[in-house]
Image (spheres, rainbow, N blue to C red):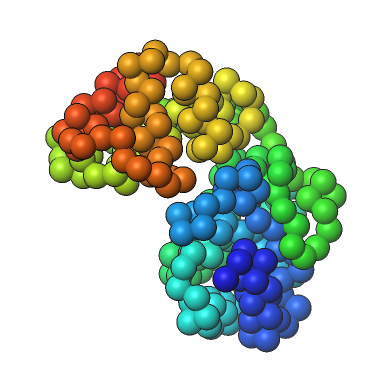
Length: 248
């Protein structure tokens, strides 16, 4: 199924199980950033609601959607129009779905990255244009959070991956290389950027000795022949690049 078909199915189900609830449906994430890859990417949504959603109704919507198609995941959150005009840090937890699990009070995706991607290039499926929503943005706060993410999550991830077997997988190469360089690119560009775009930035920015592992990470995402025969060599190159990206 295409993104458009999945969204249409979702809206039909939402209108059936919870009439009048979903006033707006917007896509963020890879779809909004022009980097959606069938078979790789999830569909990330923001649903603007007219009232507090009924949890059993949401569970029914997403259970039926899962039966219609198991992949890609249709991940997102339910917010009011007022929530989008506020700093997400001040918004209370609310309904969200992640990999088909529906939670009543979650902080999943309730952060500035989501708000910024939506404001930058969100795709309106139902409801007014994104520009009319008045989505809250705060670049200095987002930049500070991005630097904290590099120093916190990604530095810890590098340490764990250096010791454990997970770092030798192709998945880890794509996640680690593209995830970390995307944050550096976001800081350099002054906007939230996509993983594929960030790979191009990394090839322009970092020494040629790291280009092979950058291209391998991109290859895992977009397809093509493997550039490494040895996962040990690939892991070593990823660790070397991450030292440059995280400590630079």
